[in-house]
Length: 176
Image (cartoon, rainbow, N blue to C red; front, side, top):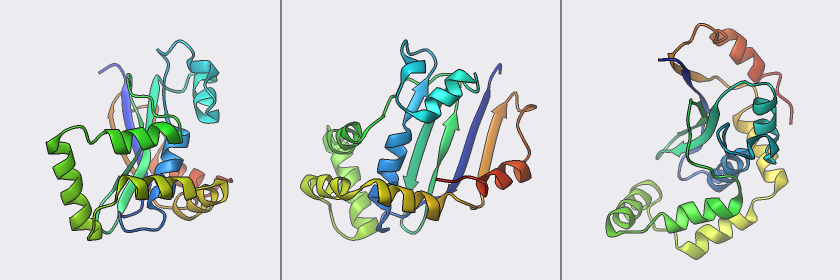
Protein backbone atom coordinates (compact mmCIF):
# COMPACT_ATOMS: atom_id res chain seq x y z
CA UNK A 1 0.00 0.00 0.00
CA UNK A 2 1.71 3.22 -1.12
CA UNK A 3 -0.13 5.52 1.30
CA UNK A 4 -0.74 5.81 5.01
CA UNK A 5 -4.41 5.64 5.92
CA UNK A 6 -4.86 7.18 9.35
CA UNK A 7 -7.76 7.82 11.72
CA UNK A 8 -7.40 9.84 14.93
CA UNK A 9 -10.41 10.25 17.21
CA UNK A 10 -11.46 11.52 20.62
CA UNK A 11 -14.53 10.54 22.58
CA UNK A 12 -17.43 12.34 20.96
CA UNK A 13 -21.02 12.89 21.98
CA UNK A 14 -23.98 10.56 22.23
CA UNK A 15 -27.24 10.98 20.35
CA UNK A 16 -28.74 12.32 23.58
CA UNK A 17 -26.07 14.96 24.21
CA UNK A 18 -27.03 18.62 24.10
CA UNK A 19 -23.84 19.10 22.06
CA UNK A 20 -24.87 16.58 19.37
CA UNK A 21 -25.81 19.12 16.70
CA UNK A 22 -22.96 21.44 17.72
CA UNK A 23 -20.42 18.68 17.05
CA UNK A 24 -22.06 17.92 13.69
CA UNK A 25 -21.77 21.60 12.74
CA UNK A 26 -18.13 21.62 13.90
CA UNK A 27 -17.43 18.52 11.80
CA UNK A 28 -19.06 20.20 8.82
CA UNK A 29 -17.10 23.45 9.32
CA UNK A 30 -13.80 21.55 9.23
CA UNK A 31 -15.18 19.56 6.34
CA UNK A 32 -13.39 17.35 3.90
CA UNK A 33 -10.59 18.10 1.48
CA UNK A 34 -9.02 16.34 -1.48
CA UNK A 35 -5.90 17.44 -3.34
CA UNK A 36 -7.38 16.24 -6.64
CA UNK A 37 -10.04 18.96 -6.50
CA UNK A 38 -9.04 21.74 -8.86
CA UNK A 39 -9.55 24.53 -6.33
CA UNK A 40 -8.27 22.60 -3.31
CA UNK A 41 -5.60 25.14 -2.23
CA UNK A 42 -8.21 27.92 -2.38
CA UNK A 43 -10.82 26.37 -0.10
CA UNK A 44 -11.91 28.50 2.85
CA UNK A 45 -11.03 25.95 5.51
CA UNK A 46 -7.84 26.96 7.29
CA UNK A 47 -7.05 23.31 7.88
CA UNK A 48 -7.34 22.44 4.19
CA UNK A 49 -5.07 25.37 3.32
CA UNK A 50 -2.43 24.25 5.87
CA UNK A 51 -2.55 20.64 4.69
CA UNK A 52 -2.40 21.68 1.02
CA UNK A 53 0.39 24.25 1.48
CA UNK A 54 2.55 21.87 3.48
CA UNK A 55 1.77 18.77 1.40
CA UNK A 56 0.71 16.89 4.55
CA UNK A 57 -1.93 14.60 3.02
CA UNK A 58 -3.73 13.74 -0.18
CA UNK A 59 -7.12 14.13 1.49
CA UNK A 60 -8.91 14.20 4.82
CA UNK A 61 -12.42 13.71 6.14
CA UNK A 62 -13.83 14.61 9.55
CA UNK A 63 -16.31 12.27 11.18
CA UNK A 64 -18.75 12.38 14.06
CA UNK A 65 -20.22 9.00 14.94
CA UNK A 66 -22.69 8.91 17.82
CA UNK A 67 -24.03 5.99 19.81
CA UNK A 68 -26.56 5.77 22.65
CA UNK A 69 -24.11 6.74 25.41
CA UNK A 70 -20.91 7.95 23.69
CA UNK A 71 -19.43 8.71 20.31
CA UNK A 72 -16.28 9.17 18.23
CA UNK A 73 -15.23 12.47 16.71
CA UNK A 74 -12.12 12.72 14.59
CA UNK A 75 -10.34 12.89 11.28
CA UNK A 76 -9.57 10.23 8.69
CA UNK A 77 -6.70 10.83 6.27
CA UNK A 78 -6.63 8.74 3.12
CA UNK A 79 -5.27 8.84 -0.42
CA UNK A 80 -8.59 9.64 -2.10
CA UNK A 81 -11.87 11.19 -0.99
CA UNK A 82 -14.83 11.96 -3.26
CA UNK A 83 -17.10 13.47 -0.61
CA UNK A 84 -17.07 17.19 0.13
CA UNK A 85 -19.17 18.37 3.06
CA UNK A 86 -18.05 21.85 3.90
CA UNK A 87 -20.83 23.93 5.41
CA UNK A 88 -24.06 23.93 7.41
CA UNK A 89 -26.26 23.91 4.30
CA UNK A 90 -24.64 20.70 3.10
CA UNK A 91 -24.94 19.25 6.61
CA UNK A 92 -28.68 19.93 6.56
CA UNK A 93 -28.94 18.40 3.12
CA UNK A 94 -27.02 15.29 4.15
CA UNK A 95 -29.13 14.80 7.28
CA UNK A 96 -32.48 15.51 5.66
CA UNK A 97 -32.07 14.49 2.03
CA UNK A 98 -30.16 11.33 2.95
CA UNK A 99 -33.53 9.84 3.81
CA UNK A 100 -34.28 9.05 0.19
CA UNK A 101 -35.84 5.62 0.47
CA UNK A 102 -37.89 3.46 2.77
CA UNK A 103 -34.83 1.57 4.04
CA UNK A 104 -32.97 4.76 5.00
CA UNK A 105 -36.08 6.24 6.62
CA UNK A 106 -36.77 3.03 8.56
CA UNK A 107 -33.16 2.88 9.79
CA UNK A 108 -33.33 6.55 10.84
CA UNK A 109 -36.62 6.05 12.72
CA UNK A 110 -35.28 2.94 14.47
CA UNK A 111 -31.98 4.58 15.42
CA UNK A 112 -33.69 7.66 16.85
CA UNK A 113 -36.29 5.64 18.77
CA UNK A 114 -33.65 3.36 20.28
CA UNK A 115 -31.19 6.13 21.15
CA UNK A 116 -33.33 9.14 22.13
CA UNK A 117 -36.77 7.60 22.51
CA UNK A 118 -38.46 9.75 19.84
CA UNK A 119 -38.15 10.77 16.22
CA UNK A 120 -36.86 14.25 15.32
CA UNK A 121 -38.88 16.06 12.69
CA UNK A 122 -37.03 17.79 9.84
CA UNK A 123 -38.14 21.11 11.36
CA UNK A 124 -36.60 20.15 14.71
CA UNK A 125 -33.29 19.20 13.07
CA UNK A 126 -33.26 22.48 11.14
CA UNK A 127 -34.00 24.47 14.33
CA UNK A 128 -31.26 22.70 16.30
CA UNK A 129 -28.67 23.41 13.60
CA UNK A 130 -29.75 27.06 13.43
CA UNK A 131 -29.17 27.43 17.20
CA UNK A 132 -25.47 26.61 16.85
CA UNK A 133 -23.22 29.67 16.86
CA UNK A 134 -19.48 30.32 17.00
CA UNK A 135 -19.39 30.35 20.82
CA UNK A 136 -21.17 26.98 21.00
CA UNK A 137 -18.67 25.42 18.57
CA UNK A 138 -15.71 26.89 20.49
CA UNK A 139 -17.10 25.64 23.82
CA UNK A 140 -17.68 22.14 22.42
CA UNK A 141 -14.19 22.04 20.90
CA UNK A 142 -12.70 23.09 24.24
CA UNK A 143 -14.73 20.46 26.09
CA UNK A 144 -14.27 17.49 23.75
CA UNK A 145 -10.94 18.07 21.99
CA UNK A 146 -8.53 19.95 24.24
CA UNK A 147 -6.35 17.68 26.36
CA UNK A 148 -8.35 14.51 25.69
CA UNK A 149 -7.18 10.94 25.21
CA UNK A 150 -7.14 9.78 21.62
CA UNK A 151 -7.55 6.60 19.61
CA UNK A 152 -5.31 6.06 16.58
CA UNK A 153 -5.62 3.50 13.79
CA UNK A 154 -3.21 3.42 10.84
CA UNK A 155 -2.64 1.17 7.85
CA UNK A 156 -0.01 1.27 5.15
CA UNK A 157 3.23 3.26 5.26
CA UNK A 158 3.19 4.25 8.94
CA UNK A 159 6.91 4.75 9.49
CA UNK A 160 6.54 8.55 9.46
CA UNK A 161 3.68 8.55 11.98
CA UNK A 162 4.46 10.24 15.30
CA UNK A 163 4.10 8.08 18.40
CA UNK A 164 1.00 8.19 20.59
CA UNK A 165 2.59 10.29 23.36
CA UNK A 166 3.66 13.02 20.93
CA UNK A 167 0.22 13.22 19.30
CA UNK A 168 -1.47 13.12 22.73
CA UNK A 169 0.80 15.93 23.99
CA UNK A 170 -0.18 18.03 20.97
CA UNK A 171 -3.83 17.70 22.03
CA UNK A 172 -3.07 19.71 25.18
CA UNK A 173 -1.24 22.47 23.32
CA UNK A 174 -4.15 23.28 20.98
CA UNK A 175 -5.81 26.64 21.54
CA UNK A 176 -9.00 28.02 20.04
